[in-house]
Image (cartoon, rainbow, N blue to C red):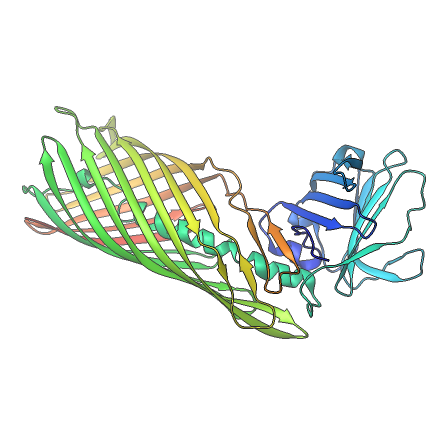
Length: 465
């Protein structure tokens, strides 16, 4: 029987996910449909032993919606977190329960919902998913309704689904590659750089970013561009660049994304003021190659996927003039708002025993930044800028990852992961004139844990003509 869209990752796999909610839907053999939406703090799960917590007020259970519907899609039973008496987690291999037929089962989660609501249990045993719904007054150990869960030959279902969930990193790569140049070499408007007495500039830049605290990601980009005064107090620029991201996945898998982008910017300074208003746009086209590793019959297998990613970004930024000075530094605030749309095209893996196919993903990420720059013109050649900014993400959970195994027997729907909404980033810029018409800029940034790189840097050479 082909399952409905399914994604409840049990056992140790739960600790490997960023998403807070897990969703499972099954066609039961009695014709009914059982559905569970469970939100649990990932730190709750402990594969080494049995855990219990009591009461619906326990913060470790963030969400619980359970229901059973009949063939007419009428709800015949439902319960939520408020009815919970306690929840018990039995990790795989503990074999602590026995049902009415005296068959030991493992890897289960019990939701005891009290005398008025009955009980609901979900679990797996030997590659098979079981669901029990027991209305109030019935024996809890009523027989399991079993359905096949996972492609034929998969023994460790949670590990297989966890490897599939890694494909969400493909979407994240497209967003990261778009943000690196926008907030690296282009983290300041073009007008903030010394024009060196000319009306046009050529530049070449190199960016890098690295994260290791939450995910292991390394990303680089480089570009060349030119800008020119196009009217009174108005500057326009255009650049082309190339970026690449490499990321390690579980079981020696990998995610490699590389491609090109074009970028344009228009800056305007109102006559007689030091305000700068800038509008920047960028379009990137990336090629992703994914080597997914997963356990298969006691060994590690790999399936290869390849897809295209398109990212489109727009940023509006306003820089204010210096408001006050302290110890030789002039302090000026700025604010920006950016939207990045990322589209990952549908694709099908090849090779390996258990490849999968994935549907298209599409999402708009929105963020605002509010910061302060402290600028010190040390001498005619050297300028130092120190900055601090707060970053807030407005968008909710990212796109769900949906698809099916290559046989078409199992569909999956893994919920999108919500971004970490807030972080703070510190930066240092050095502008140094190598010659009367040549400027070297070096910048470095470090961030608290968030959706930007832990550390990043950029180097640019600007030649006026």
